[in-house]
Image 1 (tube, rainbow, N blue to C red):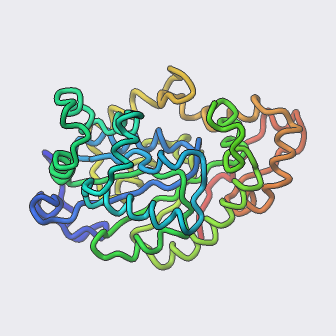
Image 2 (image 1 turned 180 degrees about the horizontal axis):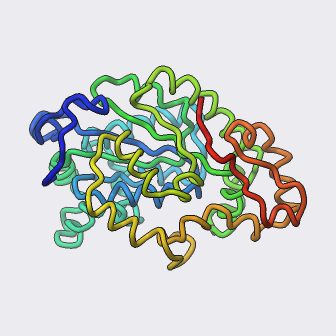
Length: 327
């Protein structure tokens, strides 16, 4: 936190000193959620947030729900309790969450601060009392969620004790579905494979976003993955301002090392960011693209994506509007 300029009312954050942001001292952390769907660039964006040394990152807390989209009750009641508890650093009642983490440690490995402690003191890693206390030391609490649709977040945004801010991250459905083809967990799960379900969710999210952008002007934002990828430094600077975070030197270091070259497999966050969003133009046949476009007409239009006209056009066209403005 050295050199951090406290908002003092800016970004709708009243904090003027560190204790104002630390739960352990009776403060209110800056709480932020990245909400999207599978293979939309959220791992990359979450790791950018995690690169800030004052941030405690809750990575995909709903992993235990497997490959389903939560669109309402009864699953949302359970999921909301889990999300709310984690944002308040309360692991005490989260037995199934912790048990899942014991068998799937990637639930914790993306949280750099926590996993460093887990490596040193593995016997403490899944002990609620330790997690409660450790989490409460951090002024920034971030989370990424890919299994819940936006309309359900109204209750959390309305909770004055959280002062939560939410980013809805959107990606071209053609890019999403192309990326999902490479994941072993996707086939056989309709919420993952069916373009009609994906795009119905995108239309639903658009409707909710219209409402939220007016009701929560300072605490709700929409960004497209493609726009972030094409200009990561400008986009991340704007995103951090929205979240009330400073652009820490370690965040710049992360961008310098993770946006220039492709390294690693399909889950790697080392990417040539300018080309990563558009691989689908070469990796999908026009027949596949045409089928997606047929079931995603409304979603593509609402979110500012252009249609490929034929196979040769698909290989070379720019599929996004130059400057998308959500209104």
